[in-house]
Every structure is written in structure tokens, then in C-alpha cells.
Length: 326
Image (cartoon, rainbow, N blue to C red; front, side):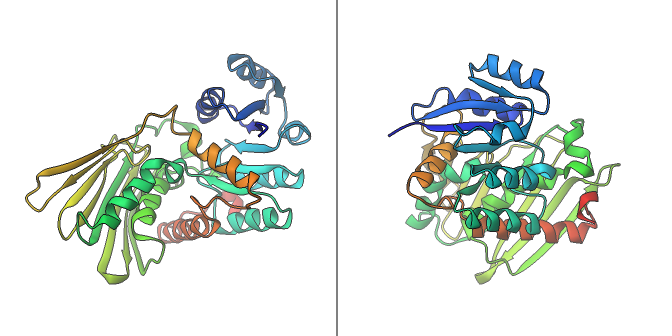
């Protein structure tokens, strides 16, 4: 099997973690890095011993050697960047949130299908072994019927320009809230019967923090919180009829603790050793491409689209529209 040749679009913090991960992976080769500044791309390339640095995204997609592009640009650019890759015959692994809205996401997926190329959302936790462990533990019935869950993800990041600028699709929802919604989706699926929410906005008009309540068939409910202004424990807790389970860090699953009806700890699952956690989505994309698939089973297009639709509805409730949405 030949190594999958990968390029990264965007040279920020996530791109650096990815690059550091990929150089430690045996079956992939990080060939190129593209930034809108050649100096920035060159500095990034030398830091991670990457062969090629491009001063534009167009130069990256024109490189015949690159097979798969990881898009690590702001949310507002994902659709445009993904379409550029697909038009040049590149498979795409696109950073979350997949797009700024459902309409863009649909456009990206439709074009990928037309071009017979893989496109998938880099919602890294969905690809982790611990995601499967959560499913298996729930299916075992150890906590009975899971009826309620809570999840929170809050960081002290309100000073980052990218996260508060409406023109870059900033706000807590698309950056961190998407993880809480994905956690609920992982546990309860995507058939939502009702969406209720509250929001506090920044001076720039995006969501600084939000609280979301999702209702599901059979009386199930998810209560989710995310914020750019405070620090949280990042826990996801699933409450069942025979006990409950606590997942440490819904943004990079660390452990699962199972408690019985007496609130006594009865079982613990620890995260397997990993490079960074980013390797699983790269491995899954590589495997899917080799199998001729147009989506990754771990993060199907249908799930990405349904979650984008939920986030569109939340922003509608909050009266938040990005400038480029017209």
C-alpha cells in the first residue's frame, strides 16, 4: 500500500497539531502546506519538515502529487475552499464546523458526489475508538435506558478575533457548541422533535454563550452549553434508568466512568494511547478513499447535514445571520 499524500490548507494552530500528528503516522505523507502568505507557509514547512510550501491555496490544489486536502481555515471559508479542492480532483477532510450553514454543506457534498470524491467532516471525536466504546457501553444496558444527557464545552477564547467576527462565522456555536451537539447525536441520534435555546451575544453580534435543549422521541432530552467566555469541565454525562456515565472531555474523550443507582463507581474505561487523537480521522479518510467510498462511515454526510440544520435553526432563534448569508 502506498502512502496517502496529503496537503494542509491553512497554517494555524489546528494545522500545526495535524502536521505534528501526520509526521508520526506510518501510512500517510504530509507533502505540502498552503497559506495565503508564502513566508508563513515556508516557516510552517520548515518546522515540520514538509517538502512543499505554497503561497496560495490555488497552488496547492494544482499540485498533481496531493491526493487529500485537510481544510484548516475559518468556517466562513470552508465551502469556497472545499469546492476549489474538489474542482481540482482532490479528496477533502474539512475541519468542523463543516460549513457556515446547511446550504453550503449541501453544496459541498453534492459537488463531491458529482466529482466522485470523498468529502468528510473532521469532527475528530466521531472517529476515535472511545466513540465506539461509548456506544458499546450504552448498548450493554449497564446504565439502563439512557434518557437524559448534559454536555458542556467552554473555553477562555473571547479575545481571539476569528471567534468573534461575524464575517468569519464566529461565535461559540460553530466552534465549540458543535461538539456538544455531536455528543448528543452520538448518544441519541439525529431525530430531534424540539429545539429550545437561549443566547448571550458578544458586542460584535455573534453568540458568546448559549444553552440548548434538544428533545427526542421516547421522552429523551439533551441539555447543552457552550461559551467563549468561561472555562468548563468539558464533561458529558449520560443519565440512565439504572445508573449514569461520566465522559471526561467531550472534545477529546479521556475516560468513561460508570456509576450504579447508589452513585457508586462500578467501571472505568480509559482512552487508548494516541498520538494526538487527530490520527483517527486521517486513517478513516485514507481507508474510505482506498475503498472507493465518498463518505466516512464514522461521520456520514447525513449526520453532518442534520447537525448543520440544527445550528441553522439555533441561529434563526437567536437572530444571528452572517454577513455573507445575504
